[in-house]
Length: 74
Image 1 (cartoon, rainbow, N blue to C red):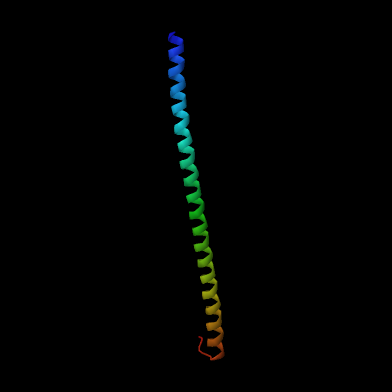
Image 2: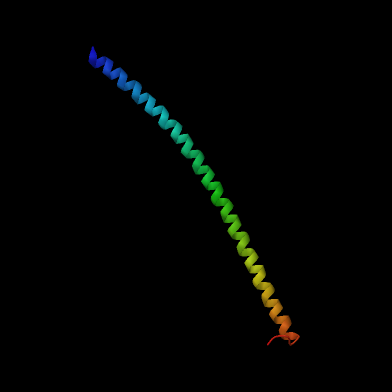
């Protein structure tokens, strides 16, 4: 009889643990989705920064050329 009670208690605890693990799985999935969104956002920021750097470099080249044509450079 005591073995049966022990097994029932053990089964209840295992079910409780399984339910908690299920909640944790859902929580981790949500966190992974948020991280993925953050990575996409950072990627967009990096691309925007690279495009801005490219535009600035292009303007610097154009200014150098204008200065040479107007004989303003040293």
